[in-house]
Each structure stands twice: as C-alpha cells, then as structure tokens.
Image 1: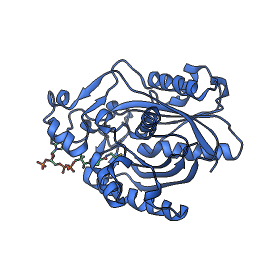
Image 2 (image 1 turned 60 degrees about the vertical axis):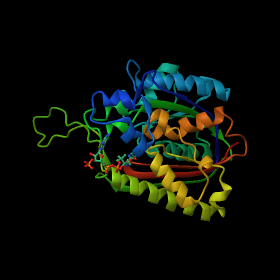
Image 3 (image 1 turned 180 degrees about the vertical axis):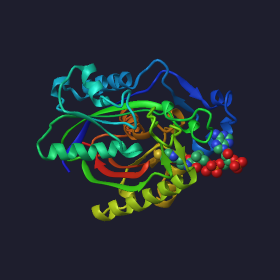
Image 4 (image 1 turned 90 degrees about the vertical axis):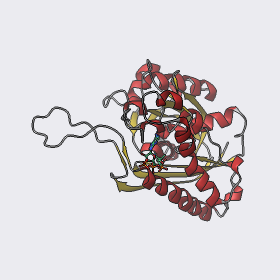
Length: 317
Ligand code: COA
C-alpha cells in the first residue's frame, strides 16, 4: 500500500436533535433509543446543503495539510446521495473551491470511506495522483422516513474531508461486497414515467436484527483475516475505529476480540449513524484530543448496505 492521511476534518450541521425532541412527534423515548443504540443526539441539516458541509470540511482539511487547493489532483466523494444525482457531489465541491481536476462520487454505503482509501491507493501507487481529496458526506435526514421510528432515530447528517498523499501508513486493506438488496436499501423513486408498472416508497428500508448480526460477524471474521495476514493479534492494535452504527454492535465486537473498552472509541451518542462519515469523523476527534499520533496502530472497520465491508490496518504517519 502506498498512502498516508495528511489531515482529516469534520463539519456537521448546526442543529442538534435529541432523543427527547424525536419523542415529541414519534412513539419513542430516550430510554429505548439510548439503551438499544447508544445514540443521544444527532446533527440534522436545516439551511445547510451537503456541499456547504463539504466546503467547510475541505477548507479545514486543506489548511491542516498545509497544501493549496491547486495541489489537489483528484477528488473522490463517498456519498449515498449528493445534493444532485448529477453532477456528482465531487464536482459540486470543485465548483465551490474553484479547482479543476478529475472528480467523482462513489457509493459503497457506510463502507465508503474505506473504499475511497483503496481507490486513492490505486491512483497514488500508479503515480496518477499525488494529493487526493477524499470526502465522506451524507444527508441521511433526506433518505429516512420520519414517520418510521425503527429507522429515523438511528441516523444523522455530516461530512468529513481528508487529504491523502504518498506514504506507508496503510498496512492492510480489504473490501467485500455480498450482493444483497433485502437487508438494507433505499429504492430510488420511479419518476413519472407513464410506462413504469411498479412504484417504490423512496425511504430507507432495514431489517435491523439481520444487519446487526452481519456486522458483528464481519468485524470479527475480517479482523481475524487481517491479523493472520499481518502476523499480529488484536493486542497489537491501539484503537479499533469502527463504523458508528450501534454501540451494542461495537460492544459485541469488543467482547469477541477480548479487548478493553478504551481501545474502542465511541462518539455515536453525539452524531448517530452518519453512514460513510462516521470513521473519518472519529479520526478527526481522536487526532484533536491526541489519542492518534505518529506510530498509533489503528484498525478501521465499516459495514453497510450492499452488504459491503471495508477493513483497514494502518500505522499513523
Ligand atoms: N422507539 C421505541 N420502540 C421502538 C423503536 C423506537 N425508536 N424502534 C423499534 N421499536 C420497537 C419495535 O417496534 C419492537 O416492538 P415490538 O416488540 O412490540 O414489536 C421493539 O422495539 C423491538 O424492536 P427490534 O427491532 O427487535 O429491536 P432491536 O433490539 O433489534 O433494535 C435496532 C433495533 C435497529 C436498534 C437494531 O436492530 C440495530 O441497531 N440493528 C443494526 C442496524 C444498523 O446498524 N443499521 C445501519 C447499518 S450501516
């Protein structure tokens, strides 16, 4: 592998929605949501567009990396759905920050950040790019059904941007995709074609318990593969930076890996599940508070619709 992360910065919308706020219009309560998921609050877009959040995160990430906008030679944006289906969110960002370079979106659902790292690695290792801007940006609030208490309480909005360049931080990276549209999906609306025979509901559909089991199984089995390949054990990892979808999923993975709580950072209580944003957002917070520094050994693991997974071991440079 051939890259390192130079900087990571987050941007979340101003409005914070608590579990109590949701209980004002849904048949739910703080006790149920926090005990089943660990979530207390989430940030939800009001006036902000996704590109607004991206612009804010990108400006901070570029400044922290100490490069100029003009040094960016590729933009990869991981999103389930940008502000437009076309142009891509990556192109909207190029317009905002006035750069002109290849730019495209990818959708690997909640595993998107790790998929983007793998794509960036390909570009860097073949010499096709030097400084790549990876953005994860999600507005889950426009995808969920706000009358469905089983899904809308779980998600939040936000973005995170990072600059990656040539380096040796990533020691292992593996992606998987099962091929499944049953457990977690969002069917795109069918438009107004007079010929289309079926209509979709256009909201997130999820079989929560099945997704839960898939997540725990995959984190454990993929970590075993990674550790075998690198000839290390879970004890050699400083932090397990897992996709923040449910605190109980993280806890189950931790128990199976027989590791102490402090090695599994959790911030889901403040943000909910922001799909592909959760891992870079957590990295930003861990860099800010000093938990990540040069030499810190990280295990990243994400899972999401598809069903996709991404697993990565890196030593921070
Ligand atoms: N408030 C109150 N009650 C709720 C509720 C809510 N927000 N959502 C569901 N319930 C009810 C259900 O209707 C059900 O009631 P019933 O027993 O009368 O039928 C009961 O709570 C239990 O529901 P269940 O779905 O069995 O709960 P659970 O313990 O499996 O937790 C999830 C549900 C969604 C929190 C959990 O399955 C989960 O997190 N799965 C993983 C989802 C995920 O990570 N998705 C993203 C992947 S990237």
